[in-house]
Length: 461
Ligand SMILES: C[S@@+](CC[C@H](N)C(=O)[O-])C[C@H]1O[C@@H](n2cnc3c(N)ncnc32)[C@H](O)[C@@H]1O
Image (tube, rainbow, N blue to C red):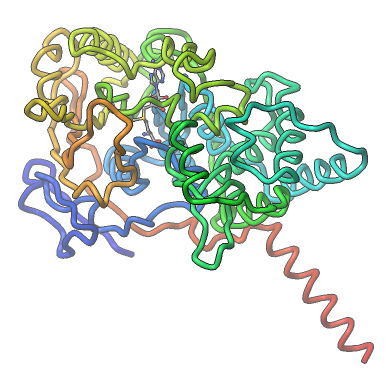
């Protein structure tokens, strides 16, 4: 067991023996930087997401400030890092994201179906596809240019199947299939030309604009690979289910975060730990960065400036604020946090510094807390500045965005005024009890059947 002891009052001096292994460091010592960038449950790799934080950061706060059975909440859950990591560590979770992609990924991970049931659901879909001749896809040129005609036909069938219901009504199996599929919609090819992704070769973290992709395809004479979507999903699923998935059933919402924290979905005074990362100031547009995956989920034309999907998402998501309106938005978030935390609960809120190329970097979290902290029921327990070279970040920011994230994130560790934090654990256990607890029962059964068949054939010879 690797146990790291962090003293409450002298966190900076009582640091572990190990140093940072990813080049990062914080003002309180290496903390989560002592774990590898790949640390965490296998299901985290479902789908890359712009602005995601590493599982090891979520784990650090889960271990330090909560116990099994506690309620852990993330109101801006993105790809679902917090609900997954908290669930597999035995915590109850409530997650939430207003972006349909964030909602689907979070809900798939908060309550994953068993390997057996998701494999059966996929097999039934494949039989359904083969049973009748399929309609020609009715899709825009933006989507058509990315895929081989046979791949697109399968995608079109799966999309129509999923969209027969509103995504709020999707079953755990449908959410898992949609999440895994979102994760392979686009990505880079290997040197030998093979790929785990369905599209022409392009980055998997975010979608470049349709115009850029069109030019890129023409200039590089790219050919879309003839991928069998069902096979690629099965490969992906096998990787996601390598670790055991046991844990309490998590709940996921698709609401405006301040409304979630002030409404009926989270009871006042019920939350042991809140770990979250709200949108930074104009750093990532969660619509355009995901226009291809959002098409899969039924949101059209997000890639185009005046597209219907783009306008809807831009109106809903809080990624376009000025500093003044961002302050108002975050004050509502902080007030909601103050309402839902238990008297001795903790909130860890990760906010990155923002750099406008023409101006000095804005230490957003520090300034925000200075400007609005006094109007809340919360007090600052600790401010952890986290430095990670930009090229090592889980998500890097590319040229498309107006503002830019910098190498520095800041974690505001907050509690309700007057909280007694003396009982909080100082132990961080970096063992992963779920790791290699997979392949889960289904993989084991498949292997047993294979072995039995091999033994039988050997006896026959
Ligand atoms: C920095 S990302 C969170 C990333 C997450 N920690 C992860 O590891 O994937 C911020 C998220 O907030 C969501 N969001 C933006 N405005 C929102 C709002 N008003 N209510 C709820 N979610 C919102 C975005 O869709 C995005 O997924």
